[in-house]
Image: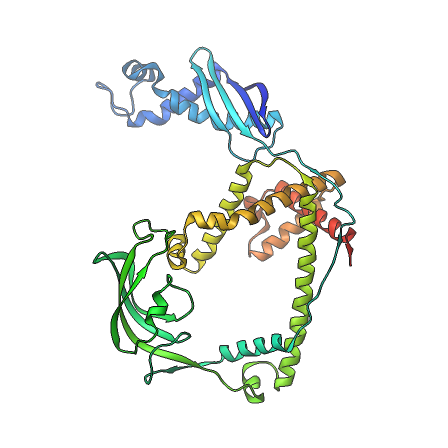
Length: 426
């Protein structure tokens, strides 16, 4: 491989011209032939035994060129990127500009690079800290949650269903008189008012009695992820099997003793107050940190490629998909339940993704400005922590996380500490 030139074509975009020798090209052609010949039949030869020259004469000299290029371009481009010293934020767009058996291959790789960043005034940032006081209302909300957790479900047979009730239903949905996929379930438990279904569905069950069968009319949201249903009217046939309501227990010492580690209501409330005060203190600290980071971002100058924001959004969506998978839910099911779509989810994540990308770039620049680094002992200690967290051997963790990446994260963490420790908290 020969890196012929490095040309900056615009901000954060570099074009690499790469040459691959005829010798390396020949080796790749031979590798492509060896891999493909088992599937090639030539009259007079057993399948997989035809000589390369005969195959090239039969199908054309360039029959293995495409596979040879595919063998070469990945490692060759990676080598050129490393030699050029640029830092990528996305895979390069590669174009074969010429290919010749005698002269070799010429490639052009268009690379989106990490932006140049300037950040200033990140030390001594002044910020106010406000800790909210714990009110009697806050404590009452916590005790209400305790009562909710210990509520009993009582079957209702003397009135119609109301918001807040839990119903057991069979349902099937129809569009233009035809049942649609994913619109049917049996013995489905639903809390009316929970917002699990599209607008109008839960509200239409209110007023009906247990053992009643009826139809409801709803309209799917315009941004519904199933295009065939988006904005469409639908009819659901409902079999309302049962209606239940919550019966809350009385808040007294016996109830507290049975449900918590405390003996009296007063002891429980005192603990609630303490926990809420600690929570408010942490929330205030988090708000201070958020204000500090916002100021750091404001004091940063950089032209950031859109692909960096898009990549972060993709990562956030993948993280959501993994969390949902642990609950046995796919992204498509999530979109169906919430009445959202991939497009709306990306819009939801856009602002958060931009902020995270900007902050990371700013912190990495602080690392450079301050000459911050991570020592070998710190890296090893972090590997040990990760191994313990994920119940893995350290060597296993190292297969998934590069020491270089971990060192960067540790250094960025030190930059965060520097900013927080130098801040002026009022």
